[in-house]
Each structure stands twice: as structure tokens, then as C-alpha cells.
Image 1 (spheres, rainbow, N blue to C red):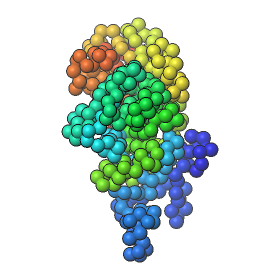
Image 2: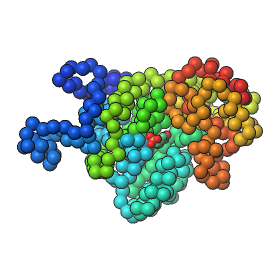
Image 3: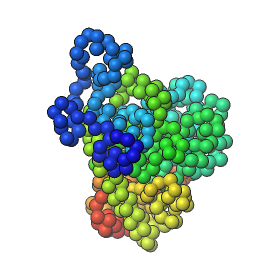
Image 4: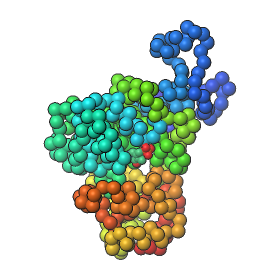
Length: 388
Ligand SMILES: *Cc1c(COP(=O)(O)O)cnc(C)c1O
């Protein structure tokens, strides 16, 4: 597959390989190891003189198909698939950093990513400074002589803050650091960070790439040179993607474009409706002109995406009333599913951070996050209206 194909085409065709049986749909290769024609071939494979499969901790054809398809969509030279989004971030850090290195990261990151930086990497001598997702000057000011990695997520969860990827790339380049972007919320259908200058892309495939809430997986993407140590870490330590999960994700990618378009259209409709509700004090959605970074969002992403947050008047009690009076929406912290989910960030995803830090981050007690699914928008509105 060449770059000349459109994303919709790459999503259904890139990376496909056929076995001797000429199957049309991609096959699932449930095998942990592969055989060789001769002792000589085995030897050549093991020392890397001949390409080919050896063992599923290293490679598996179904996983390779997924990697090539996602790489084509992101415009990346190489993709390394992992067991989860968190193991993608771990593999990227373990492959590219060493003791004594420093990370500058957005303070608006997925909670487990913050824990990974603060509690796991720190034990191995990697320190992190957290800065505002939106204030580029803070990224500049946080640079140290040992800064090796910038890390951000845009739009952020749950407030949908937009980080300026091109501007933060320029700051990273000025000190020789790499920029990694967690592109989970947008997927390559809505945003292609490598084109804006980022060096590394992280995915939790668990979310929109699966799209139906079935399996966990992740990916790291970038140049061949950068992915070599990331792959090396995985090959040695084993948080690799299973063939079954890769097969689910391959099929997920085939419908990603039409799903992201539908998630986006439904989200915009919901956000506009929420803005008109008397008990809603504020709506956070990058596709709304009222979003503080609407213009930047519309330059950087194709649509506002599938996540809408809003604040109800009356704090926690009022927010819980809205959640508890829904009859259809799923009360869960997951996102990127066909089914719309509703979350109270202050008491779930962000409960473990201090009330002061939560307030500083703008996550108020009245805040509700909706990951908009594929149901009819009117049914989602009616369900929210019960408690509003
Ligand atoms: C869910 C999520 C992750 C972690 O992915 P898992 O597949 O759950 O390990 C990382 N980043 C973002 C933005 C996420 O939403």
C-alpha cells in the first residue's frame, strides 16, 4: 500500500497479507511459535539475517497486519503493538529513556500515565515536571539540561483542553527532546501528530480503535530508528499484543472513519443541546465556538471528537442526580464505545488526586463527562433530561 491512498482505503486494506488459503478477511494466527525449513534457516532467523517469524513475543502475522495498518493511517514508518495503552507508554519510556533523564509532561494526562511517571519511572531515576497543557511558555520554562521527552495528550480528559502540537514541537526541538503525543481521543482519522512535528505517537487501542469495548491493546509509532529500542524492550519483556486482540483491532480500524464521523456529529449535537439547558452552567467541547481553543482545535483536528464534558449547577449532588436518573447511558469510566458512557470525574477517574489539585485542574464537583456513542442523539438527550 502506498501513501497515495486515502485514509478510508488504508483503514480497510493496508497491511493485509494472505495465507496459502486465499482468505479474503484477515486471518487470526493463534500460534505461539513458528517452524523453520531447516536448521540453517532457524539460525538465520535468530540472528536476524533472514526476516520472518520466530515466536509470538517477537512477532505474529496478525499483529504485524495491525501494526502496518495503523502505521499507514498515522503516516509512521513503524508501529509497535502492545498489550494495552499503558504498556505502550511504558515501552516507549523504557526504550527511549535511561536513569537521570527528565520528562516534561502535560498536567492533564490520563491518571495511570501520571502514576507511571510519578511512581514507577521515578524509582528508576527518571523525573517528571508537570506543566499546563495549554501554556507553551511553561513547557519552555520546565526544560532542564537532562530533558529528553515531552509528553502530552490532546484533547485532554475530561476538560477537552487543546495542546498546540506544532508550538510544543518547536520548544521540544529547541532542547533536543522528543515529543510524544497520546492520540487516543482523536485517532489518526481526526488528528495526525507526526505531520505537526511530533516524534512519537501513543495509542490506547482499547478505546476508539476497538470501538466496541471488547479488548485491551495499545501501540507506539514513530521512525524506524526510534521504534528499534521500543520493540527491543517488548521483545525482551513481553507486554506484546495478542493475536486475538490484534484481529479485533484490525476489524475495528476498518470502520474507524465512519465511527469517528458519527461520534463527532453526535457529540456536536449533544454539546449544542447542553448549552441550552438552564441547569448546565458550562459545556466543554472543542467543536463549539464557545470553547476557549476552538480555533486551534479546528486547525489541528478534523472535528471536535467524541468527548463532551459539562458542569451542572448544584455541585456533586446535582451531578450524581443526573447520572443516577439516566436509564440508558452506561455508568462507567470507559470511552470510545458504541454505547454512550457517563462519568463523574471528581469521584472516579480523578478521585485519587487531592481536592486542591483537582480544583486547580478545573475538575469541579458538578462536572460530568460523556463519551458519546452511536445511539440516536435524541435518545441520549432525553436520558440526560431526566435528571437535568
Ligand atoms: C485509556 C487510556 C490510556 C490507557 O490505555 P489502556 O489500554 O487502558 O492501558 C492511555 N491514555 C489515554 C488517553 C486513555 O484514555
